[in-house]
Length: 156
Image 1 (spheres, rainbow, N blue to C red):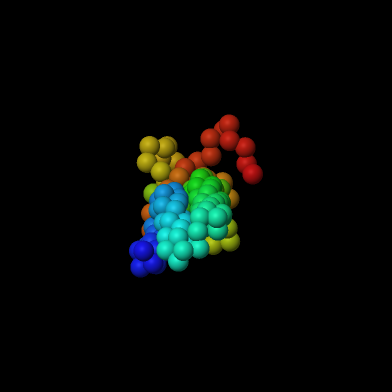
Image 2 (cartoon, rainbow, N blue to C red):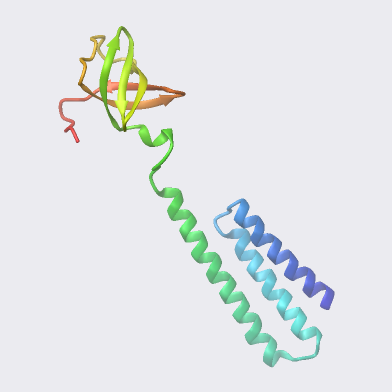
């Protein structure tokens, strides 16, 4: 029985480690916490200590484990819904200022950097003026697809 208890403890720890590297919204973590609780139960009851000690210790281990998994899962799900704050994805929707434009493409300034830009397909063919504010619609490599600001959009 002791061997099975140790195996259950190790399997529970392994499931929690897998949960940390491949999030499953707490499913594997909860199963790991329950496996650790079962392993503790088996270890305590196999040594003849009795259920008067095994039940509270097992319940305590399981409750603490499930509580940690619940808090971590909630934090992970909250972070998943948070808006993108870094990387090129965060540029979409930002305002850029035209620095130069020739034909279908030009150069815009965004957050202190100069970017190559192309006018988003489907908008008028007129050339944006230098200093005009445009909105980033998409990022493709190092090129921004931009559009003119709509009249109802307020400048920031």
